Length: 242
Length: 308
Image (cartoon, rainbow over all chains, first blue to last red; front, side, top):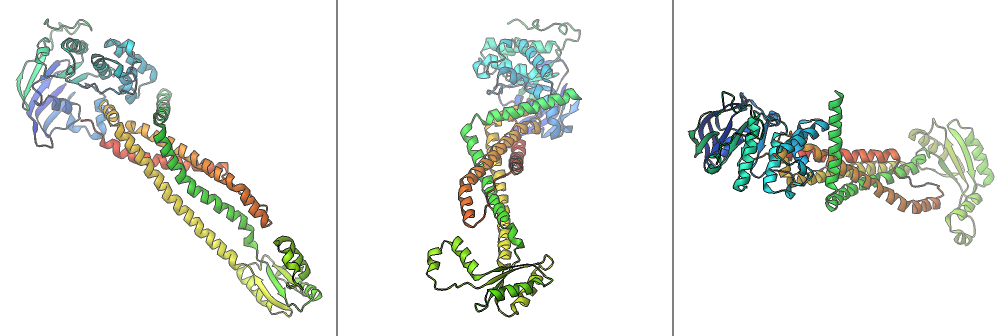
């Protein structure tokens, strides 16, 4: 699903954020990108979402080299990826349901289909009762769940999240991670950047550890090839006990 | 596919209404923008109304190729009628009318308001006059000039006056004014484009975060631009409507004095305001200019907003 080949990223301030990063994340994997802040986690996610372009090296998403995607093609490309942000990036001037509907409106879905999918997505994150609320009336954890609902509403095959639990207390953070795990259980590839080592210790997931723009450690592919967890439905997330 | 068309139309209608809702959220700022557009459009529009009315009022003067033939004071009324009879036989003359000195004095007394002063005169200072209307074929600059020379050579004729010089000057002046109105209109139209462009630019800066989010979830520049274009349409519609109302108000204020003034000149001219078609045209132009301004600003500045 995602493949980085000797990727370098240098920003205008001459700092080398990524110094020859290579890794591969298969379709259906649940992977954590970890490392202290400034290690290059966010840069990797930005390269995947085409917010940035690599200085050198190649990035493949869904078997397609991102170098082949012209600026005009970026919107269409992003519609296939769900993105979750640390600061949620919700629009405060409109209700929760409209925030979640945004990707579908942009993609031009008919209204009936939008209503159906928005309600389904809100139901999945447990916020169906809040569809008419404004984002600022919700707690931080709830706002993050709205952000997740928006990321999954168009049913992307890839979900990426940048420090999605950064502003949450530990219990809420676990809840959010379990939510991501449920989407992974139904086949969505999930990549989460986080520096919270204690949190990810509680999940049996692939780990790519970064330091100073390099991959310094990596656990193997954890996709259950025998299908042990693949059939598990939402709510039955196989999460390691604390 | 009718379903897709319906969705597309519904989406545009929603954006149209949504952008209206957004700009009325800031009534003062919106009102200022609309007022600037209205004033900018009203000025050339009003000048044009005045110009059109002047042209209408003077249109029949263009055919005023009559020659006034003033006779010698010594020539009496009989001689005037005799001369008139001779002139009527000319091939290049369509009509001849005699205004006797007495009649001229009476007309002058009635219309000029100098009645009392004229009573003080011991005798009539006005000569007998013959008004000669050339035939249509002779109503050219050369034809009338020839007629003038020919009549001036006759006995009993003092002077022949051909009042086309000032008509030509008036027409030339109106042409200059017409161009001036177009120039002013063009400049102020450019002003409307710039004002709307600047308003939209500020609007985009204020909503930068929102545009970033939209682009992050896959919005094209065109999609992000659409609400701003509709804002532009609303500004234009409001400004155009304001301009039409301003001009209508100005015409209403001037209608009575103008009618009064025209009456003093013996004319029944009335000030004509904007017709329905002109008003609709003004709205169209206002919307087009405003849309252009927002399109330029939105295209430029939305491209520059990139998520980071």
